Every structure is written in structure tokens, then in C-alpha cells.
Amino acid sequence: MLKKNLRSCIGCRKKTKKEELLRVSVNKDKIISFDKDGRGAYLCFSEGCFQKAINRKKNAFSFNLKAKVSKEFLEQIRAKI
Image (cartoon, helix red, strand yellow):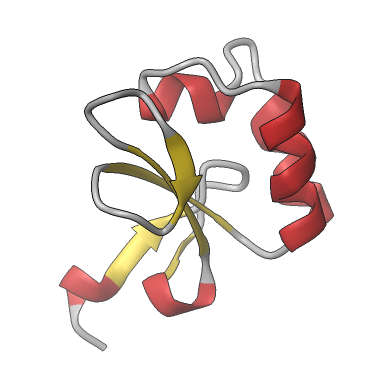
């Protein structure tokens, strides 16, 4: 396995192949979406990791993407996992 193909989950912080993670991204216009160009954050397909990511002192999605993630989009993320 090539090291460049590994990404860290923002929930559990475990390194995993990027193909096995959900990618959330934000573009330069601060539009948040799934797996588009721009700054990205990766999450395991696990409710536990999702809960860890949103319950951190700083919401891990907003912190890693450097953009405010709405509650509505968090619900879309939950639906995907």
C-alpha cells in the first residue's frame, strides 16, 4: 500500500486508504460538498467516527475545512454514512 493513498479520519484519526473514507470538501467560494476539488476532510463510514468528529471541542469538520459547516450539511453527512 502506498503511503500517499492513506488519509486520516477526522473522527478516530486512524489512517486508512482514501477509497474507504467519505470525503467532504470546500472550494474557494466556501461551498461545501462531497468529493469535489478543494480542501478536504475524510471520515470513516461509521456513526461513531461521525459523533467523535462533531463532538470535539472544535467541530472537526469546520476546523479541518476552515469553513462553517451547517447543521443541514451535517445531516447529509450522517445520511451518507
